[in-house]
Amino acid sequence: MFEPNPVAAERARENLALNRLKFEVHELALSDTTGTVDFEDEGGVSACNRTVAGFSTALPTRKVGCIQLDEFLAQHPLLYPLCAVKTTWKDMENQVLAGMMECLRRSRPLVMFEYL
Image (cartoon, rainbow, N blue to C red; front, side, top):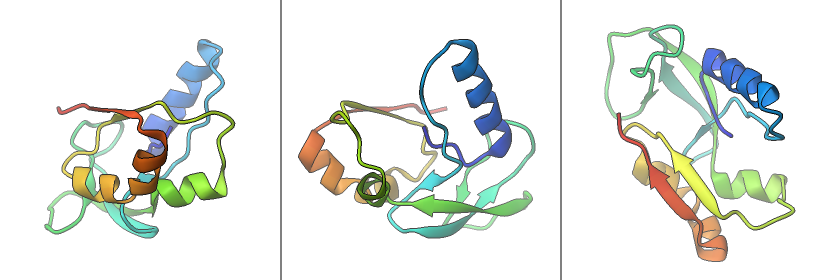
């Protein structure tokens, strides 16, 4: 699981532990590049928090790490094929998809988009 918001990432870890699910939470944003990106930080787990790319914002921002899913998978090979991807990319769909083209070609996962 990828969650660049540290508050939301910690809540996800707590929920996974409570439900005895063996998933890892990575505090990274997915993108078509690897490095850092500005992230709106309205506080807490606000649904308005999002990656700031190609526009300006009046909200506070902070730098978060970002990575291409293809690069992440090359560094962390999976034991099983990736069969599904659930997303809440908030206007970054094209960048995230561009960063996972090899995964899409190889594994052909179901991709689910969540729009708020």
